[in-house]
Length: 155
Image (cartoon, rainbow, N blue to C red):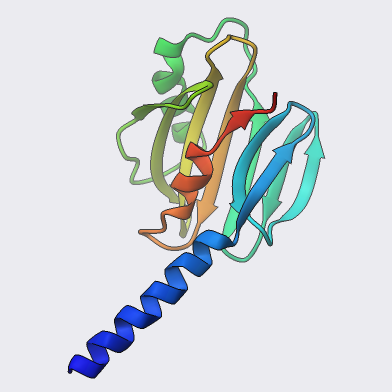
């Protein structure tokens, strides 16, 4: 039993850091926004229309938030509306968070058979805002949260 326990500790000390090391800085060049994402994402679209990339585990969509004058206080209500329109089921409550350059809100739920996190990021300087959707497979996967919390504007 002790041998099994030590084997599991050794396994997780190698596997978990390996997942963390697979993230790399990725940039949506049209808007100068960067974030950490899995190194093996295949980019489908990198244009002023949006940024879409995916692999077998994650599918990431980023779009410029449309609409003049979206306020920080309205982000949660607007995010909930888009998630409902997209038929996201088992929605969590909307959670606010702060990044160095963005005010953010997020909610988690189910997008058909997979898990997803929806988020709005509003630049603190008022220059822009982004819609971010990350679809993923594993219930307790922390990578979508890592991706979301790494967003920043290029200087």
